[in-house]
Image 1: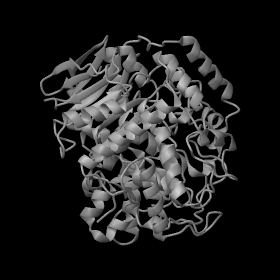
Image 2: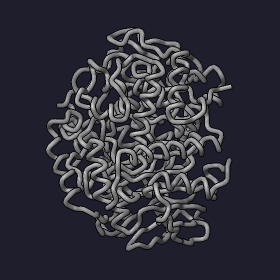
Image 3: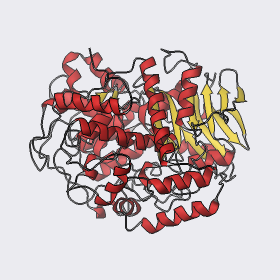
Image 4: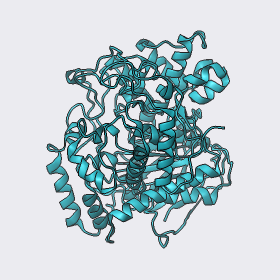
Length: 597
């Protein structure tokens, strides 16, 4: 099923894995190829390293929840499997061009791009695109191959091997985490271009249409779907500021009142950028595109939910234009805003504590664009240092700085604070691919008083009973593992977590009906959870093979409690966290979790 592309030799072959059940052409198959075709201990930048890009058997189908493409490789940031998903139309572009999956090995002699068209894959020269940002490179490739071409491309950060460089699809839809853009850069691969409009096959169009009709009818009645559908979308923060401890502020060092405001909805007026890149077949259009009016390149301003947290409050910045400018620059230069924000916040705290003389300062909104550009281009000693990520920068700067690197397994943490939501903390620490905010639903959503009551029945179906948000015990560990298994199943099939159970309109029954309708084979809840478990097992096996880091959080979350607001006193007790981690591992059938020596 996948095309196997060797950039060193220029050969392209097909490998048929259709008789092999249970991988659905997505990340499970990619992990199997990664384990089979690469030796243990291989450097992520070695030409023999494998990069996997897939829409799979479901991604790109014109229906709600079926838009994702997965990018997977050994991460240069974590040293284990790095998996990132891109929303938007790129997966449909892959299917339209006649490919479900690509596995890329080798290294091209010159900067190159892959063209997928009419079921063929060819390699083309891209030296004239060297140094181009995402927008300029996308424009140039569409000028060659038509305005309807779908383009996944790296910016200067990927070419410069920034360890958290992203791949950005169709201008504004990044596969952001774990440095997969740097893997493309190490292969001298600038882009993947897909040309063609063949629709993805659907076994039962009427059943797919019925699920789509349910989704459209739910847009107003489901609170999160309505939030995503409206302006400024679920990535825009409006109204009251979050309670202290909910989000990271100044490198998670201020777990009390912080005084940072949340922009009002009116603040986004005039900042929206017209785009036709919404996910095919989905009426929600979750990922809005915003950028300041005077920004030279505005089309890369796809606003993910984490931008304000990572590039704003975590840096002590609450300036709307500054955050939107930095976010658009991240996408145009090809940087993960979460890891960039974590690396900058680390440097800012070190500078504040006198451990990095001349370093950047919290709250300096005017300096943010320059800092983004310096990291992407490895400009100057600071840009070059922070391009390695906070964990490596701390090792270089010395042991006194290590406590201020908010990382797990080498990857910068998402900016939802685990002191208030311990299930998120367990997910950050124990997920075998490293920390990711969209790996499972937030603890607050299942609090009996504060949560989303309409989702409780769905959560119970996978054994996740409602519980007070601050409770940290063995049952929290088991509940987290069950929710992680469910969302791992979504990832395994390239199903969109922002459309799906337990909190969005596509319930488990809708999801299984949708998969059955597309594939023409009965698909059940047990199948979904089995796929989720299989993906987690494959990720863990690869991490063990590669000597992945310990399942632990930075000490700050265990030692420094929230100091104000409704969550005052929230902290992750070490003994309770260890008990919950053990229960988490047992629920997934794994041995006790790894800890630091």
